[in-house]
Image (cartoon, rainbow, N blue to C red; front, top):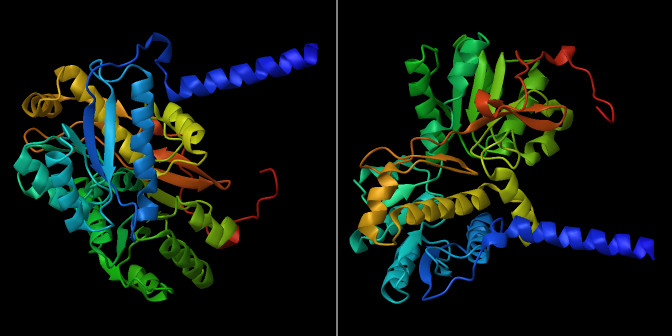
Length: 407
């Protein structure tokens, strides 16, 4: 009987922990009343982007569940209405217009991706509806003088900001900067070169490589010609893996190897222990020590029986910024919310939210540098979020030893 009682007690405690994870303020909550606050969002649920956007939708819905369980917003329930753009940017704009006109959405969460955000922003501006841009990281969005679209996503332009200070700290030498031939990678690489110049770190002009590049031997030769010692790459996990394969075959070791995608599980799967000491660039990780991130990850796992990804953190964080703004403004009136969001500073799992005055452009969020150490990704920059100290310079291939099980 004692054993049965203990089992029952254990089950009760587990269920209690789950409820608290899903709704941290449930103990003090009162059921929301009155007409719901309608929040409109458009997320790709069919088409090419649907798999990538799934976490974004789940993050938004998790926030809705938590918020209503904890009493809603301004004492009212929140009803999130999500439309599908079929992975089309023009369709996203049409769906936002419908959410505003037919569904009477009071506020909006931006779509998944920069292309859809570009078209959707025009609709929000014309209707004077506040839109929280959770996943539009392109700087092109904010060249239009937007007044109602506020960015929560980490801008592409800051992804490489941690590289120059790390290179300077470790005397890594001149940076060899290489980018896949796509707009996102080139934007990140160009911004890094500009940031390096500001910090007095020498960098090569950006070298571009085609999307189907497998061998990087010619680029290794070019790095040597330019007398560049630190290799900085913007591409995919597959690209980063192919770079390492070329490095090892040629016996080439840069002083520092940083590649977007090297923080991903796919990179480690492709090259195994040769992934050690590589440094990846990430806007978010499940272990990031940002306020509320651990609770978000726990709640997401409990709700969806899956691991959250960057898109999930983006959707959830955009909603948390919206929530903070509505609470401070005490209203969902667009003009009051706009004035509040222009001065609001708040923390989210994705990082800090703060925008440049009069622009809506995010200026506080940071990408992190993640080094593979003993098969795990450890944050090494910025220092305030670091989980480990960087191991540099990048070790020579003939100086490495195989790790054994348990290391």
